[in-house]
Image (cartoon, rainbow, N blue to C red):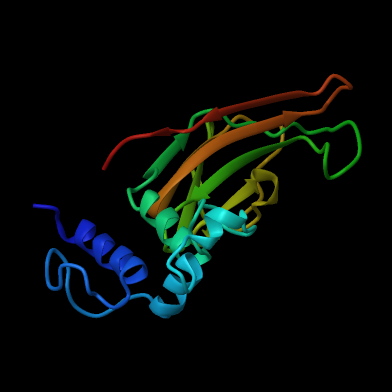
Length: 205
């Protein structure tokens, strides 16, 4: 009825709030406790008298009102359990201006791919660059660790070869896990700098 993923969520949640498994034993979920310190976690939440000490004291360091850090992390993980993003993205627009104006590296003219990996697994990303007058080059390989973001300047891609400045190009970005890709370009060839940004194009598998 609920599916294996949701049953696992029930089991983890029960391990925190009912560490002795006294309520409805064997019903809905059963088996081994998955919280490493379920009793301590429950005591931290409720206190010796069974009251929610976090909610009463406004204890700092917890992202969820009334939850200890372990429970808060659990809730965050299951909110993000649903896949975010796609594995294949395209950016049809690409251009790195040849000149810049202002302090470097902050104001260096650049194009950037903002990569978000909200999964629990590292994202191994391959980037292929396309041109109007020659064959594609790549793949350029980068890694975005689990639950991290990486803002990758196309200016910094040098292997297998640097991307030429002052030339139109497009890119296809492929990952082994779903990610989100946003494209940004800073053009600082003059004092009045121009910054543009847009989400990349993706299609479901």
